Amino acid sequence: MQSFHEKTRYNIRLAIKRGVTVREGTKDDFAIFYNIMKETGKRDHFFIRNLSYFEKIYNIMYPGYTKLLMAEYENTPIAVAMPILYGNKVWYLYGGSSNQYRNLMPNYLLQWEMMKWALQEHCDFYDFRGVSGFKDETSQEYGIYRFKKGFNGDFIEFIDELEMVFSPVINTIWNITFRFYKMLYHIKENIMEGKKNFGAKKHKEKLSL
Image (cartoon, rainbow, N blue to C red; front, top):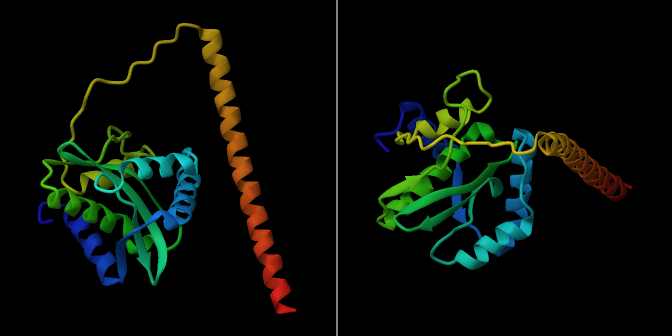
């Protein structure tokens, strides 16, 4: 930990001091895991695969090669992660956090727990996987790079992505369709969230009668 950036060490200790704990989850925790992943995707504007995708990874690679980690505060799950042990490294595969209690820095503590797993398994590497936006401090994605870099990792740049457009017409149709699909996806999520909140409100009113 001494090699981490000073602020990163501080945030890990802050999480511990404030009472954040990390436990290994089970299959029974997948609904919680998935809800937090969806919450993260909605907040940060990226798609989340369906629940069966994550369950399949777990069913195939558990035990020994994956874990479901739950960061909790006062028995409430506030952040989750799914690392993968493969070869000589542990990979940070998926992770997310609730909109509540982000000031308790649970993601920092989760990363430290996954790194400790890598050390326990005598791995040579802990792999944060990819980062983007690192060349531009004004980019919305620069914060992800800064977060990962705080753990004093080595930044390794591979060959750039290459996109070849063979059919401009089809490519244009695809881009328009994708934007439309993304818009519908977020509308659906908002409707489902509204129905959920409305149902909870009605249930609460019913109980108060």
